[in-house]
Amino acid sequence: MKRLFAFLAVACLLGMATVVSAGDFHRGLTLVCSDCHISHYSQSHTMTGGPASSVFPPLGPGGPHNDLLRDEVVKMCLACHNGQSFAPDVFGASATETRRLAGGLNAKAGTITNETGYAEYKGHTLFSTDVPPGYAGTFTPGPEGLVCTSCHAQHGFASYRNLLGRGIFAGDTLTYVTGTNDGTKDVFQRSSTAYSETDVDFNEPSTTSSKYAAWCQNCHQNFHGASGSAEMGGASGGATSSNAFPWKRHPNADVNIGQAGATHISSLSQFNGRTHRVKVMDSQGLWNGTTADNTVTPSCFSCHKAHGNRNAFGLIFINGGVATAPTEDGNGGVYKDLCRQCHTQGADL
Image (spheres, one colour):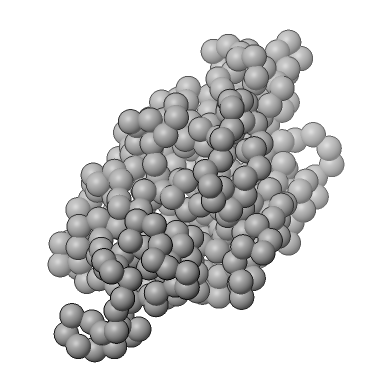
C-alpha cells in the first residue's frame, strides 16, 4: 500500500470534503507511485540527489519483483502499515493505538521474519490458503494466499477504507461520510485520519440488511442471510420468537436488540445499562448513547475485529459493567461478557 506522508498536509489544504466519493487515501496526492514501484529495480538517490533510503522503502531482496514493486506485496504494505506513525498500524499489537476499530492481523508461521504478530487463530492470517470458515463456493486461493489486496484496493476505491467490491458485492461500495453524519450512508467516520473505534459508527440505511455484513459474506457466505433463510433460521420478515422459529446462526442484519417478540432473548435495557457497549448499526444515528433506541442492530463488527486481536477469532471480550475502558481486545472480560452485552439468560456478572 502507498505511503501517507502527505496526507495531513493534503487534508488541511483541501479542507477534507464532508462526503468523500473516492476514498480517503491511496488516491490523488496521497497516491505516490514511487513509494511502491520502481522502473528498473535500481535506485541509489532521490530525484533531487539525496539518499533514496531516507525517503523510499528499500528495495527488497530477490527482485526485481512482479508489477515493478520494490518488494513482495505484503512486505510493501507492512513497510508503512506496521509500527509507523504516519499510517495505521494493522499488524499485531500497536504501541500507539490500543482501540483500533479493525484490530491487528497475524501471519502464517514462517512467512514474515523479525515480526511478532498475533497467533494464527486470533483473526485473519496473511498468506493463509485455508478455506474461509463458512465459505460455500469452490475455493481457489491466489498463489500467496490471503494478502492485503485481497480486501483493499491499493490504488484507492470509493468504498469505505478502500474495501474492494468482489463476488456478490461486485460493483457495490460500502458508502461513508466524514465529519457530519448522513444516515443514508453505511458508515460515519468523525475524521478520515483517525482509526479508533470511538471515531467510527455504523448507520442502517436499510433496516433489513447490513452492507458491512454483505461485504463479509464474500468469503463467509453461510454465516450471513436474512431471517427465514435456510442457513440462518429464524422467521422471515424479522420476527424472532426463538420457540416458534429457532435461529441456526446469529443474525447480523434484520433483528434489533430487544425487538418485540424477542425480549426474552435480548434486552435493550441491558444493552443500555452497560457502561461500555459493542458497536451496533442504528437507523436513528443514536448507537451507544445512554438512551439507545429500539432500532440498534448488531452486525459482524459487534463481536469481531475485522483484522483480529489477542482473542480467538478476533472476538471482543468486553465487560460492560466495569469502569475500565475497553481496548480492541476488551477490558478484562471473558467470552460470556460479550454475549451478556445483549442477552439476558443466566446470572449476570
